[in-house]
Length: 213
Image (tube, rainbow, N blue to C red; front, top):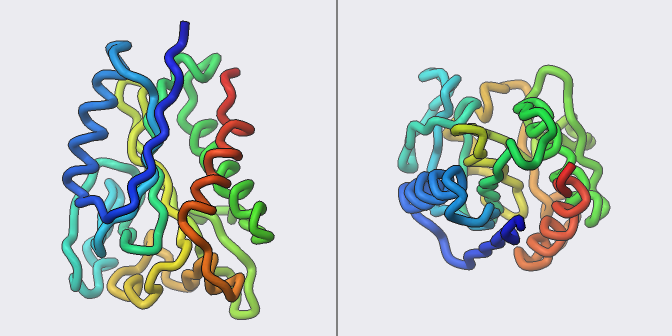
């Protein structure tokens, strides 16, 4: 019998290294069948992370701590007001044939559906990673993805700009894309969005996307 998945939602900023340690431990335990799958929703203190494709020139101003990490992707920012979702799933059990591209596509669909709950139209863009929205000022990025798969268990995941300080993104070229900006749910909606409210949407839409196949 499959163990139920664990949902964790943390209300205080979690240090990046602490999150990595938790993921490493949980992913190993999931692989051994000794722990539940887990989605951990959290915020970090202001920091930059560089994925496996990060280019040195895309770090413009290291005003916050910078972490090299094993996830895919380039530089991104994490900080208060941004909801990070670390997703630890056993893809061997969830997919008929383990497929990383299909998993990333599901993560994108999950974000798009959660944003739609608030009347925001998030979209994929050909050749551009993440989720984008069309604004009067052109395309702006509202969510990022960066994943790693270890023995077919996923780690790292997604980040959605709920209400971060968008000026903090100016220290990097987010995901190596210099000709588009970033936005947030609060900027688009013109109102505050409570993190618990967005968490509820993420949890609800997760069931629609990631039900076992």
